[in-house]
Image (cartoon, rainbow over all chains, first blue to last red; front, side, top):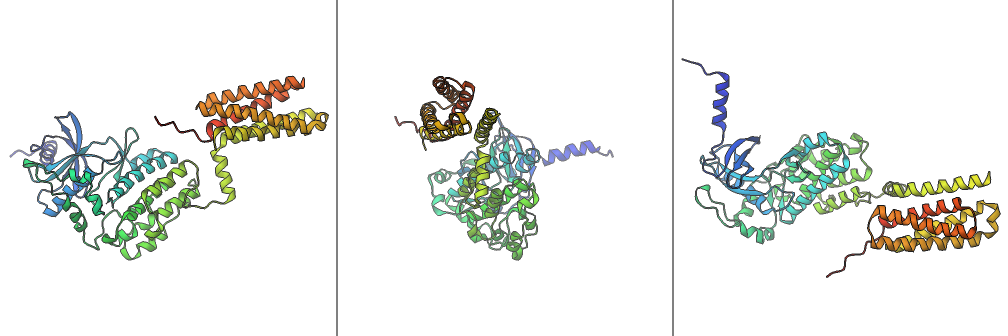
Length: 364
Length: 116
């Protein structure tokens, strides 16, 4: 008997683990990333001669619920047509029964990787504002993400910002679910690619996808109410907490440490004991810290009421204007004004110095 | 605040400050009132011209250059009338024009384009 070499074994393993895309129009290229629920592959769309990213469920023998959830994720993303949200091109079922959906291939890096090499706080804030705008759009469509974190935000090669992984997203409003965009999703896919459930069922699926008390999301970035498993009480403000936690990461290069252990009862208390961003990074301004802490307030009523409101405050920070989260004193106001109008101040000072020079020379 | 208003205010303030510095020159101290009024008017004229220019043309370098030229020209005319102190009058006057030119380009409301 002849033993297989390691190389040959690895080759065989690779062939076995390759996804069979024969029932689709796509050609498998390689694996891009693997998560708990699904794996993302790079594939070629021969009809349009472009590369796409295909998310496939990890196991074929899943329950109908998991399969339905995967379809639901594709449907949720499909209705969120926004430059900050990755568009879905196609959805269906592979020959082995796995659900897949094809989406735009984003070339770039995750926000956490991006920040490792991009140190400019201004640039980070600009990117964060784009995230807020994308999330605000989703909220306006009645969708909350529930798993916002730097790993789910991509920065494209041209600086574009995209929010990914809507796998645990929840649909909130009935009206949004019956919008004209939603109507387009009612159409069913034909043939062997499988059938998409009617859109009306989307919201019901979303409401029932997780039992009250279940903890979903990422501990370091989830809101206290999400950590307590209060699934039915979750609304936009839970995402705003997560946005605040992402901002915390951008300001300090670390996730909010105090929320490392999401023990449900103590989470709110832990959230209050999160170290202030300025204690980690002294370069963070007081208004920026206040914006971050307001977004991350343990009580959801004390947070920003919308992602747009948070985005507006980020814009004000970038323009050196006063933010709603921080009341500055007269000295700080003056300092901010001088900082904002540096060139004008320089010109006036130059003028005054020149005047003093003329006075002194005239006297001498 | 509109750009011409910013130009007028800044021109008037800087012109008045410019005139007030004459107090430090004992030879002309008794004419201080006239100097301040004249200098303020000069500043206002420069502010109007530069402010309206900024309303029409939105370019920081061109706005600064225009302010510089207007400031220098008005200061030169003042120096001619004074019959001396060319350097002491033209240089600060030019600087005032530069500041007003910068400020009117950077600040103030830009008129919205008219609807067709």
